[in-house]
Image (cartoon, rainbow, N blue to C red):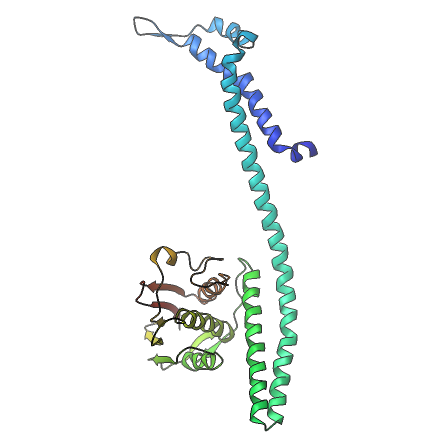
Amino acid sequence: MNFIKKHLLFVSTLSGAILGYIFLHPFARIINAFFHRHPEGYIHLHWHDILGTLVDSFDPIHWPNALSYIILSGLIGYLFGKTINGYKTINEQLEKFSIIGIKASSILHDLNNPLTGIIGYVQLVKSKIDNPQQISYCERIEEEATRISKMIMDIKTLAQGKKKIELSKTLTDLKSLLKNTISKMTLHCEVRIDSKLEKQVLVDKDYFERVFWNLIKNANEALEMTKNPKIEVSITDLDNYVIICISDNGPGIPKKILKNLFKLGHTFGKKDGSGIGLYNCKKIVEAHGGKIWIESKVNKGTKVYIKIPK
């Protein structure tokens, strides 16, 4: 059994070739010999000669004719072995990734705890000093530690795989959340916010902050080479839903790229893009019962829409 597992490709090819010689070649000769058409147009089956033809098929004189069937069946056996090997490899990888995901989720959770401590102590130190430059240093440390914490949470979401994201929803003012997120970022331009939403929305504040962070960051990176860069965010009240639109006047995204942008590993316009950010945004929005999509035209900018229930 171990030999078969180790040499599956060889075994499947050999088995295919043998089956081709034992079954396919004799069967082809039987069809050729016993299904013939008389001048009257009738098809006759001479069953009493089938056994003789079957035995005769293994005569060495017929080996040259059998060779084509042996090669064909061997090729089918080889392809079958390749398919089984590929399936086994994928299964093994999925199993490994599953284990890595479970362990990574636990490690990342533990890693986030000291970061929370660092942020807390920096805030404490900042409250005890009066020097503006030192306060600026503390704020920078706090911002970078917060950014690392967000990155860890992004990877943690990814590590959860297909597991449903557990949300802790609270009534949240989306405009205030957006302003707070933007205040922590270094951007090429000011973000204009237009909100027509008067009521608070039930969302997971931390997760949605990450959605805003990723989308604003993407828009900002797209504007790196754009003259008069603009980022605009509109929040619209629509019956039982809220529509959020984040738009920029950057170079836009080609149509053929758009359909894959929310898939894991797909990115556009970034040298070091991981393809995790938009994938996580989609997972978070969908966990809220909403949907996210992108509309973009080359040289005319990009709009990212989020639709979530109130």
